[in-house]
Image (cartoon, rainbow, N blue to C red):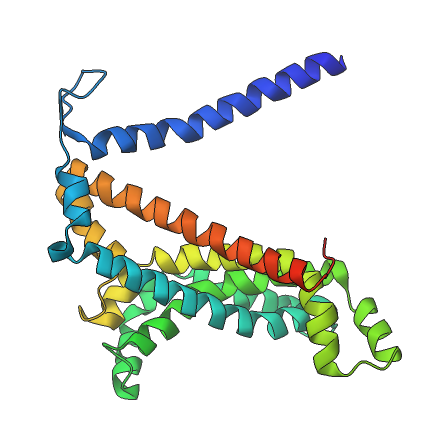
Length: 269
């Protein structure tokens, strides 16, 4: 029976991996395909127009990619800084209206950005934040904060504050407790939250377009017109660069955090 279960689990796992890989293979094929008419199983003609366009400095694709990475990294750092104290309050302490606040935190995910987009835009114009990098960073916090707070809230609910209390009993101050106890304990949660927040920020189109006003050109803004126009070769080339850039940055973030804690001889789950 155990052997059958293992065989079934292995079969299901391979099917899931195949279902994940197949769309990526199609995307790679379209990146190099000039023509792929129905019902041909394979492309009829191949070319490098999409890849060459992305790599061409005059297209400004790589410049917008670097801007998107820088923007998303700033948003990720700011989101985590705000999320840690908020998540600790929701995950550790008990107070009246706690469940309501937990639901309220998810409101930016539930309410479509289009519904509140114009109000946000007018507010940012009055504050002088429209068409500026700072304004785009702030508006990206709206869809990113719910993910950061929610993930870290679950982490704080699991670890509690017993370890922090023990550190204070032994004479550690608040800063020492936070840097030597809290941060190592929540490091896996920081990696998960940071990764998801980076992806959410990196893929924003509408809010960036609305607040950036065409002056802050991110990679999704370069990619979306090709998707909308039906140019599959160009859209696939941009999509491949989008996916690869995201994976590289996320891997580097994870390696950096793990190497930091390894160098400090911290232990975390």
